Image 1 (tube, rainbow, N blue to C red):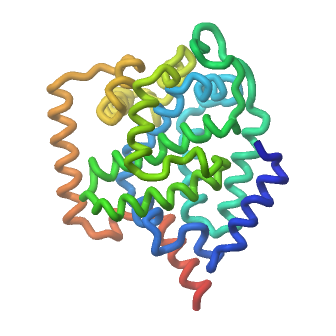
Image 2 (cartoon, helix red, strand yellow; image 1 turned 45 degrees about the horizontal axis):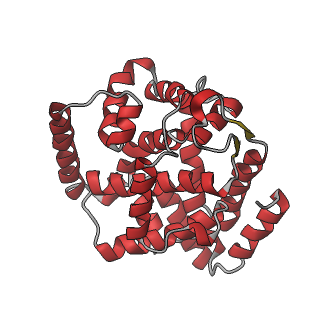
Length: 289
C-alpha cells in the first residue's frame, strides 16, 4: 500500500497523461459520463452501500470509524458526491476527492469483532486493495444492474467499453491493475463467486448499519427503501439482511421497472441528466475554446 504522498504522485502521473485536464480523467466522450449522468441510477445507491457493508471487514471499519449509524443520509450523500466528483470533476478536482478518501482510509484499521471473522484474517485496513476492490465492484455491479433495470439497455460493445473505463477508476482509488478481471464476463463471474462464497457474509455490524441506511432519508420512508433494497440486492444478500420478499413483490417491482424504462425512452435527456454532468460539459467545452 502506498503512503499518502506516494498516492498523490501516482495520481498526478495519471493526470499528466490527460489531454484536457479540465475534462477530467474520463471526459465528455466516455461511457463513464454517459452512464453516470443518468439520475435513475440514484435508485441503486442504497444497493451499492448495502453490498459494501455485506463484507464483514468493510462493515467493521464503518462501525469503528464512522458516524454512519447516526448520520446515514449525510454519509451516503457524501459517498455519492465523491463518486460524482471523481468521474465528472477536472483532474485537479478528482485528485483532491481521491486524496481525501485515501488519506482518511489510512487511519481506518482494526480487528473484526466476535463471530464476524469466520474464516477471514481478523485484522482489516481500509486501504487494503482487496477491500477497495470489493467496494469498487459493488459500484460497478450496481451501475450495471441499475442501467439494465431502469433504462433502455446498451449494446454489448458499449458495456465492454464502460468496463474498460472502470478499470481506470479502480486504479485511481488504489487497486493494482493485476487484481482487476480483464473482461466484463470475468468480472461478472468474480462477483457471482464472491457473493456465493464464504468471505462476503453479513455480520452483526453490517445488519446494524443496514437498519440506519434503510431509514434514509427519514424513518417513515423505511417501507419504501426496504422494498427498493430487497428488490435490487442479490437474493443471497437480501436474505442475509433479513429483507422480506415474495413473488407478489417481485411482480410489483418488475412492473415499476418496465414503467421507468418506458418513461426513460420518452423523456428528454435534459430531464434525465444530473446537473453535475451539464456543469462538467460546460467546463470541458470552455477549456477547449
